Image 1 (cartoon, rainbow, N blue to C red):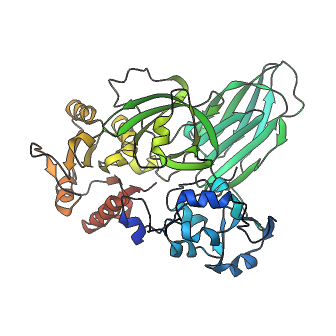
Image 2 (tube, rainbow, N blue to C red):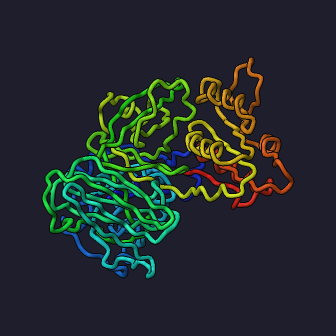
Length: 492
C-alpha cells in the first residue's frame, strides 16, 4: 500500500507554520475545503490530463512539469499531477511549487502526514518513476529458515550489534508474512506469501551481540514444507527508511478514559499476529476512514509508568499501546476517534522518528520542556532516564490553565518520591489563586530553569509542543548558548 505524507508541507520557517499552533494553513477560497476536494475526486473528472493512462516517468519528463497549471511532483517513486489540487492545498500554492517538477519526498516528510495519498490523490496519479535509487553496497542483510515437524524458524542476520526488540516489526496477515528490521537509516524487508498455514501467534527473539533475529512460527499441520513461500513486494531488499512508506495493522480499542477536560487516554491492543514496539521518542500514525477518505495523524505513545491508579494490569508481550490525545470538538480526526466504541479497530503504522537513546550516554542533566500534549514524548523519556541514569532531570510543563495539566498529581507524586526529578508548571491563563509560575516560554523562565548540576555537565534538552512554542523555544535556547547537539525537538 502506498502511504505518503500529504496535505501540507510548509517549510519549518514559513509563515503558514508559525501561524496557528502547528496547523499549517492559509486562507482558502470559498468551495476549496477538504470536503470540496473529496467531492471533486469522486466526480469522474480527469485530474491527470492522461485520460486514465498510467505512464513511466523519467527524470527529464518530470522536470518539464514545473508550472502552476502543469505541476507534477514525485513522492516515494510515484508521480502526481497536483495542479488541480493547488487551490485546495492548506499550505498555499507557493509551498507546493517548491517541489514542482522534482522529488518532493523530503519536503513532505518535514511535517505531518495528514491525509494518506493513496486515498487523497489517487485520481491525480500519473505513474511511477522510471529509475529507482540504488542501495549502497556493503549494507547487505540476509535471512535463512529451517523447520521441525511443528515449527518454522526464520533467522534474519543483520550484521549489527545494536539490534534489539524495538528494531524488528513483524506482521502476519492472512498468508502474508512481513518482517521489517530497522538498521540505522535503512530497513531490511523480508516479505513472503507463506506456502502453508501457520497459527496467528509467534515468538520473536534477538541475539543482540551478534545482531541475529529469530522468529518462530507454529505450523497448523505437521507437514514438511518444501519452501518458505513466494516473494511479495520489496522482499529481501534493503531500502532507505524514508522510502518504505507506512505499513499498517488493525488494532483494537481496549479502553478510553478521561484525563483532563479535553484529553483522553486511549489503550490499543496489537493483533496477536503482530510484533511492534515503539522506540522511545518515536511516533506512529493512526488512520481512520472518514467520509470515504483515509485520514492519518501522528501520535507519540506513552508508557504507563505514571499510572499508579490505573486499574488494568500491564498487559503481557507488549501488546498494549497507550496514547494521550487531546480531543478537538471542531477537528476532523479526533472527534471520530473519540466516537469509537470499545472493541472497534484503528489502523496503526510502523514507528518513525530520529530520537536515539545514545543521546543519554554520559548525560548528567536532562531538561524537558513541554506544552500541552507536547508532554507525550516526555513520558517514555522520563521513564527511561529514571530507570537507567542516576543524574538530574527536570520538567517544565506549559499549559493555559490548571485544568489543562495532564497527570498533574502523578507528576507531583513522582517529584515527591524521587529527589532526582523536579517539575515546574507554568500557566499562561491562570486564575488569581494560582501561586506558581505564569506566562509563556521566555529567556527569564528558561535561564532560571536550565541550571546545570556542574559547570560543564553534559546536557540534553528535549522540547515539544505546538509549532510556535517549539520554534520559539529553540531560538531562545540558542540565544542562551546551548548547542544544536544539546537540543532535541519533537516536531511530528
